[in-house]
Length: 225
Image 1 (tube, rainbow, N blue to C red):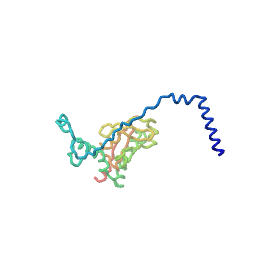
Image 2 (image 1 turned 45 degrees about the vertical axis):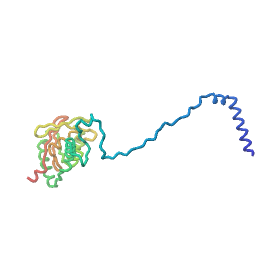
Image 3 (image 1 turned 60 degrees about the vertical axis):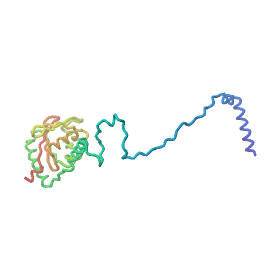
Image 4 (image 1 turned 90 degrees about the vertical axis):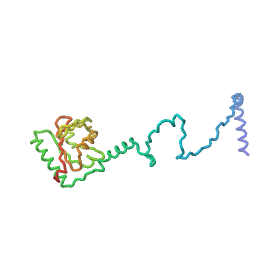
């Protein structure tokens, strides 16, 4: 009973304050909200069969049919699709045609590279050079060629720049040298593919100017000749 009495007195006090502030009159004088009518209509969904014929206007139907670019079993392969498929297969041909060199073939290629390196340096008076044996990651897949860190720190710039590789035929290939990783990225893939480099081949890099190397290729396949 004491709680009910306290609650009644509190409500009376609240009403008195509302009357003093004239909130009842302000609320009554305000605009009345208009009733909201829902005009949403129920939409009946119609399931269309996938093999149903598409309706077209006479103007569109008279035009020649456009080629389909989705791979479907019931439609002929278009010229564009053939190009896409050929390009996709050629991009991974380096993985399909991988060569795994034997230890003997590796040693043979490395021996020829060391012999050439000795001729290039000529007792320390020739150009700085180094040997780089080829592994799968250098000539397939990612095509990343890491260079000797000590050589890079001593002779190459400490920032990313373009390095030109010149083969034994005088053909030049531009590659991107990443200083932080001390290796060749963009451009090296083209050099490796056009020279048919495989696992076990051994390359000799001769540094001729600050951004150019002469590259000599020792083939592991020469072991079998």
